[in-house]
Length: 80
Image (cartoon, rainbow, N blue to C red; front, side, top):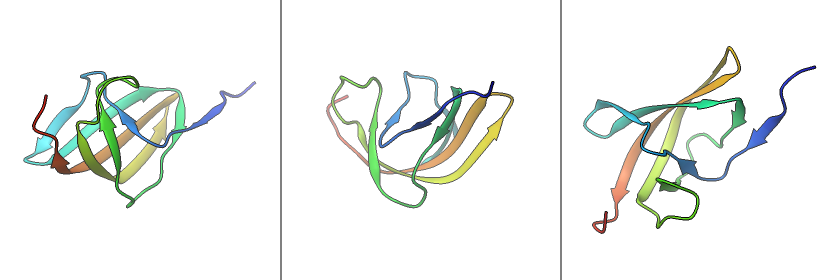
């Protein structure tokens, strides 16, 4: 039986993001998740926390029951 597909409308990092370049990050999540690509969305550390800013996903990869997203951070809220 396959793993369910989860649709995500915000990026929740839980502090697991890795910086690739100045404003480009990669984040790996358990399971298969679907995210809109090239559309600005909220980025948060946890689902309940304040929005940290706005990011746009540039690349989405599924492999070995994991989802890897590469996203570009556009605006960061100053209250971290």
